[in-house]
Image (cartoon, rainbow, N blue to C red; front, side, top):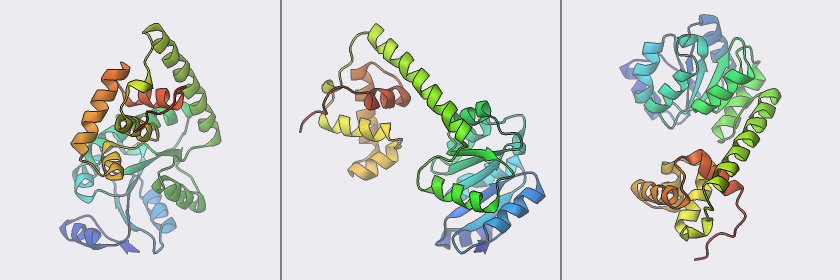
Length: 239
């Protein structure tokens, strides 16, 4: 494992390392030390910050694969810190840790862009499991939070369907084949960059397709598009 301190030399070493970087962010020395000990394998490069200014200063430069974020790092900001980090390093996947986990806080963290949410006393085996799950592009939560998320999804889905009915029909058949491909990938959670890579087109082309999709379907955000795509009742457009 490559364990280094954040400075100019560290950034060079991390860029040269073949291991994904996991950044630990917590004001608690005991928690940082425990996380480091649990991740002491050949699979990761690991570093840590203890203060919010350090996190915001270095995360755009390090662009870690994954961030373990203790909400105690910024009590005033809370889960809004997740949104801030995603702005600074969009590709970084975030697992949020809380000393008093709750479903409401977990839903807020996931809404802000986190890919995982759990109690900060997670044992070593589960911590490593959570990291691998999130790195694969999946979401890590407790069973109770998963149930709450499903309930919220169903509630939002019903509201969206009502809104679509009230505002008139919006047919997916109005989309071109490429727009339908882009919409389908968005419904799977793909970013514009990921869609561009998968379809082998420029990212600006993807943005243009998204704008056209929103205009044709009369919607304004990716969540509504995802719900509309997953609840579709028409066949996909033909080539």
